[in-house]
Image: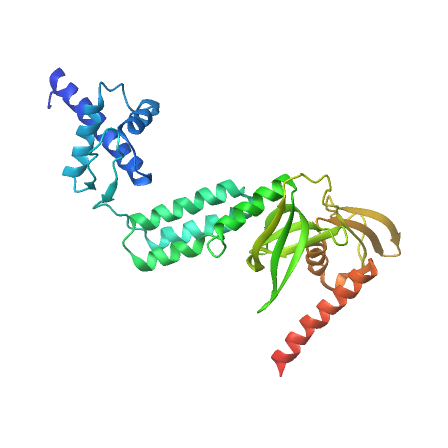
Length: 314
């Protein structure tokens, strides 16, 4: 049996501590340039790093990274930041791992907060930095649902929606045609893989929604918080040939009356768009009764869908 002396134990512990610090230092410099003071502050906060005596320990760790093949700038002046210029490390992401990453993201992204979504965006960017596989990097870029959007615009819209600010947006109605809308921002959310700004249209003081990718810019912001709240959209419809005891009512549905084998239901949704999706999911089992303009829109939508399939047959 191989025996290890106390001196050897000390040496191994010291080596492990140095190795841990070097890994943490690499992560810190990879994130952004840091001064000695900033590195020392991060070291002292880290639970896996023991107390260190001086800046010389950090300088030794920097030299250890240089010996490992990293190119790190020299801080020629007092407390200038050290910059990680190049490094020899990269990750190899297998296609199976990439598929798993996509699957998890697509399954849960609608439930994430925007802070979490932007944190994931930063994570994907770091993966790309570490990977030398251009094809894999292109696939990583496509995972994020935020990749196609102007990130600063989205951050601004989320902030204004959280504050219920009144804003004016420049909106693309169709190619080459733009219109300005004044609205009270209420919520930014994904619906069916598209990002929408849900709001109150101040022209009619009614619920509205705008596709974020068609918002060209924010023209004006009134920083006074509005007391107006997004009122739920209300509709009445009939569900055909269903027993009340067997029908699974959702939280947003209320039974108004029973008409033979049919149920008359009043339902609410955050806006007309979501109400339309809910109604269409019933298929031919559902007949919209009110509002009349919503009923007309449903009929037009059904005609449009039928038209698509008619053209397909031709």
